[in-house]
Amino acid sequence: MSRNLYDLIGLAAGICFILALKGLSSPKSARRGNLIGALGATIATVIVFFYANEGKALNNQTLILAAIGFGVLVGVPAARKVQMTQMPQLVALFNGVGGGAAALVAIVEYLKLGSDATTAVVIATVFTVIVGCVSFSGSIVTFLKLQELMTTRPVVFPFGRQIIALTLIGVLASGGWVLVSGGTTPLLINGLLSLIFGVLFVLPVGGADVPIVISLLNAFTGLTVAASGYVLQTTLLIIAGTLVGASGTILTKLMAEAMGRSIFGTLFGAFTAKTQQSSGAADTRPVKSGSAEDVAILLNYAQRVVIVPGFGLAVAQAQHTVRELADLLSAKGVEVAYGIHPVAGRMPGHMNVLLAEANVPYEQLVEMEEINPTFPQTDVVLVVGANDVVNPAAKTTPGCPIYGMPILDVSLAANVIFLKRSMRPGFAGIENELLYEAKTTLLFGDAKDSLTKVVSSLKSL
Amino acid sequence: MASELMSNEIALLAIFLLSVFVGFEVVSKVSTTLHTPLMSGANAIHGVILVGAIVVADHAKSTLEISLAIAAVILATINMVGGFVVTDRMLQMFKGKPKRKKDSGDDQ
Image (cartoon, rainbow over all chains, first blue to last red; front, side, top):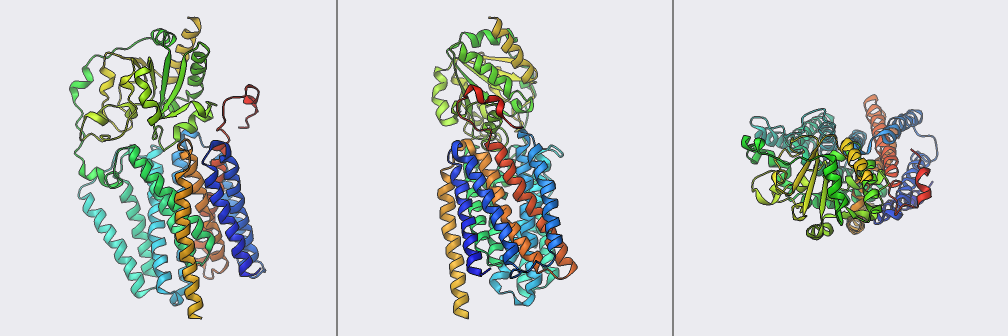
C-alpha cells in the first residue's frame, strides 16, 4: 500500500473522529457519532497491518495480535460491567493507560532511532514521556481516590510543596539531560521521575476537585498522542490527539468555572488553604425532621416541585424510585423538573447519565442557569443525596473550600426537603447552614427507602 | 531532500493547528447534558495511539523494545475498545420523551 493511500485512509479516520465529537451536540445523534468514531478507529487499526511492513506480515505479528486480543478481553468486560456511578473511575483508568501507551510508544521509537533522531523528535519524545507518565500515574491515583481505596481528602505531607517542586525540577533536568547527551538511561530516569511527579501532583487534590484533574489529564494524554504522532510522522495521531487535547481543555475550563475555582487553585489549593475548622457548636443545633407522610403531603399540595439529585441518590441506586415519584406527581398535575448542577455527581454531566439510566427523559433535566430563576415560584425542592451543590456557604463563607462555586439557589423556594442518610457533610466536607433553616425539612434514611415510603404515602393520599 | 523534509514538517504543523481550531469549535457545541460521554468518547479517541503502538511493535528488535511495545499495544487496546464500548453504553440510555411501548426493549 502506498504512503499516500495510507495517509488518505488515516485522514478519513480523522474525519470520523471529528464527526464523533460533532454527534455529541445532541443526544439524538450522539450514539451514531460514537459508532462512526469507533469505525474510524477500527479502520485505522486494520489498515496499519497492511501498510507498516510493505504488505508483508508485521514482525512480531502474532504477539501484537495476542496483545490486542488480551486488551479486548480486559477492556470490554470492564466497560460492560461498570456501574454508571463508577464512570469517573473508569474514565480515569482508561485515560491513564492511554497516556502510558503513548509514553511507551515514544520510548520504543526513541530506542530504535538512537542517534538518528532529530532534535525536534527528541523534544517531542521527552514531552510525550513526561506528560504520558504523569497522566498514567496521576490517573491511577485519581482512580484510587474515586474508588475510595484511599482517602478522598487532600493528602498533605510536610514540605509537600518543596518536594513537588524538587521533583518537577528533576523531571525537567532529566529531560534536558536526554536532549543533551541522549541514550536510554536518561530517558528511563526521566520517565521514572515523571511517574513519581504524577503521584505527587494528584495526592494533594481533594475529592471534590478530582473530576477537574481527570479532565486535565485527559487533555494531557491527547497532547502526548499528538506529539507521538509527530515522532512517528502519522497525521491521524496528530488529528486525534489534538481533538482530545481541545476537548479536555474546554471541559477543564468549564468545570473549573462550574466549581468557581481557578485551575491553579484546584491543583495547588491544598497547600495554600487553611485547614477547615469544623465548628463543634453547629452539630448540636436543632433541625426539623419529618416523616415520609409529612413529605408526601407537602408534595401533594405543591404546584411545582424541583428535584435536585446528587451523588447520594446514585449511591443508594434510587434513580428509578425518584422517577416513579416524579411520574406520580406529574400524574397528579404537579409540575416536576430536575435541577442539575453541572458538577452533580462526580464528573460533569454525570447526573444526566445516571438519570438517563433510569429512563428519565432528558427534556426534564434542567441546567442550573435555567432552573435558578424558577426557584422563587417553586413550592417544594426535594434534595436527594446532594449537599455541596446547594450549600449557601459557597456564597456566604469566604475561605471555605467551595466558596465561589455557583450553586442551585434552592433556599429561594418555599419549602426545602433534604433526603439525607445522616448529618454527615458532603464530599467536600463542609457544614450546610441550609439544613438548620425553618423552611427546611429533613427526612433521614437511605434515599431509596425514604423515596419508596414517600411514594406509597403519596399513593394513599 | 532537506526542503522536502521541511515541507512535511510544515504540513504536520498545519494539521496540528487546524485540528486545534476544529477541536475547539466542535467541542464547544457539545450539549452539557453529554459532558460525561464527551469525556469518555474523547478518551476512546486517543486510544488510537494503538496505531502507533503497532508500528513500533513492528520494528522493535531487542527484548526490551518488544516488551515495551507489546505493553503499549495492550494498554492502547484497553483504552480504545473499552472507551468506545462504555461510551456507547451511556449514549444508548439517552432517550427522548418516553414512547410507552419501547421501555422494555433495553438490552442490559
